[in-house]
Length: 316
Image 1 (spheres, one colour):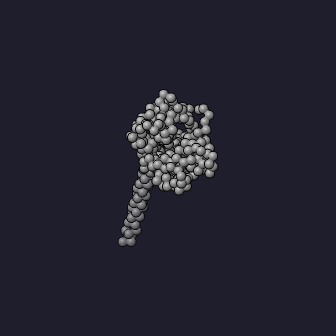
Image 2 (cartoon, rainbow, N blue to C red):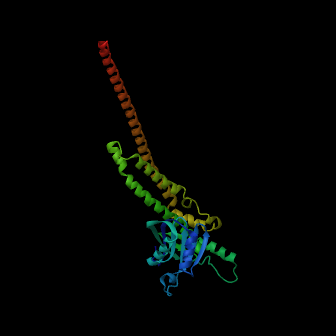
Image 3 (cartoon, one colour):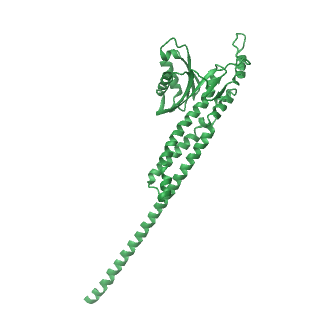
């Protein structure tokens, strides 16, 4: 990407955000910022950098998007202290804060096209302005982690933010599943070497539950798998979202993640069956030993009776 002072930082901070609460927090902390509740799951905040820096010379607007599944997207100057402050404020309006959060950076810049200029003359109607923006959107694209934006419209950044937020939430799941796979990698080797794995039934059940929870989070997390409802109304922006989603390979990564989970789940299904077989074998041996003891007791009882008969005869 070409050198650029503008950066997009997308961070997965928590398991979920309380969107209305976040809007209230930003309104209290930065009284002159502009907050917009796009829908119950997404909010947009526009805030001057000077409010965060306490420096009036910073005449730059920062665009921030919050997603209910715990992801925040920052569009602004490439200054780490700015987006770190934003993320710290987010933490106060969320639940399930992660100890360490994943984040991804891209750069961005405006790239104007004279073919379809976005005019803002007083005689132009709102509808006409929207039509001009729609024409201009076709020139926005993503290449080598750099967004080339053809309009200053915040909705354009939101369309790309949806795709980046999904990708970042998926990265969080990938990290958790990688940890799970690393922990369980030794078991197939142990099974191949010794023919058994020294795991208790409770440990196997807990791991199976964790794997199921991971899969449930991915499959039932419709925000990751489906096109957001926002694009029902903004169909002009949907191609940008789809292209960005393809760029970050969200669909392929979801498929690969499910396949990896499937392989580990098969391993623990096999270990579970092995434990069941061991338990069944143990019960069979217990039954055999009980029968053997019963036979021994019966034999001893019979022996005692047989030895008592001569004694009784001699007494008579």
